[in-house]
Length: 581
Image (cartoon, rainbow, N blue to C red; front, side):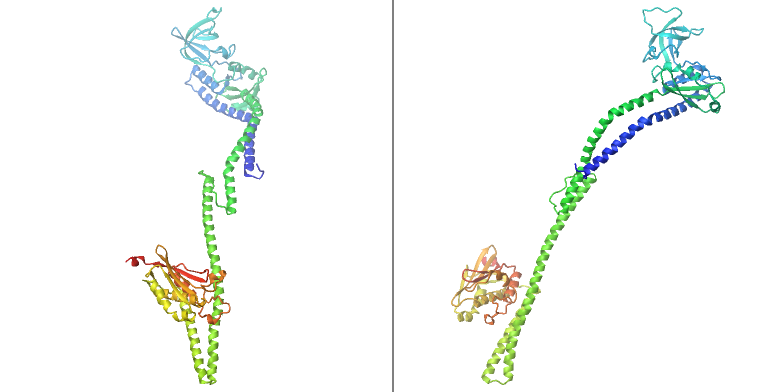
């Protein structure tokens, strides 16, 4: 686990916070729980004490009902109650009792505070249970019995001076939910009164109806008690409530031992759980971090595998979407960059060709203009008549050459401006080639060339623009004748290459074209001869026009070196339906 990692930081923060909370809770329990318990217990006792005072002061309640209220208060609050006279002397009360039905007579068994322990009282007593009690009747009607022993052994006779009664329980009120041996606690009232002499301030508070609070410690057991005293509403009686503080003291001591015992276990569990929790929480963060690193390196090959529906899942989906969008954008940019590079290259090539075009055009126009000027100046000098005829013929020849160049340039400009629209029709390609070849009979004879036709059939019909294809074949045959060696053969072949296509090839026997120049022969004013020898003929625009015409026909064309010379080929769509018909 790296010190700067999210896992380490989350682990440290989580562990520290949990330990701080745990330590704070435990320390608060050790140092402040006792005070809180004291305050809470006193407040509860005071509130219940005020309610009990109201019940005791009600005139409609008899003594038995008042005792029941007092007993209920003692059980609910684990407290001892005493009623004091005006001299702060204890007035005995016996709130706990058992009522028995003995031969249709109700006998009240009063549970005394002294001389009896809680263990002597039957546990889990229910109405209808049968009890045997040995005791002393304290009234003339023998209806109130002071118990000495409850449920004595059956084999033992009644002791002298005691009476034994046996009957069924009809009602009872006994100590419940109180500390160990609460009857002993009830006997401590006299000791509390012996140790307490109210001072003037306490007397003043009692007269005002306030509650006087103080603590008292049992010298024999060392248990601390909280003692509350308040007037009952008249000047003759006071209500004293005493409750033990021993349970909270014992609880605090146990908590201290428990804290020492449980602290190492809790710390160990906190460290382990914090580490697991940190790894679980930080796992999607680490996955997102690795994905972000890949995105920074333009690596979009992997998707984030987080499918939860929380913020991490939403962020993962957004990053996956971002990755896909960036991938698509990068592909588009790459494609656009490639096209831009091609356009830049084409523009650079076009600029180069433009400069070359200007140079070539200047040369092509300058030469005939210079010739015409020279011959014209000779005519102005009144040269001999036989020379003037020759000069005029040369001037006409050069003018025709310039006119052909300008016409070709106008034709090429139309193609480059995409102003040409083809007039597609069905015609015989073999007849077209033969007709064009007849127009070159003089050039063929002058160089002693033979023209050979290699056709698969007498009639091969195609769908194309007749006039434009005538121009293509004229240019290609003219180039083939111009660059062919004397006393050689020029071959024109037509072959069906695939369904719906025919290929025309014109091949001569002559000089080869350098491989690096083959891709440039279709450009305007491009010539193989560096010297631009005018005897080779042509304007340098023929193949450029051919290229545009073939591209309009969506033809596949090329120029290539053969074993003996150079060949040009192109394809056209065959009209097979017409042919079959």
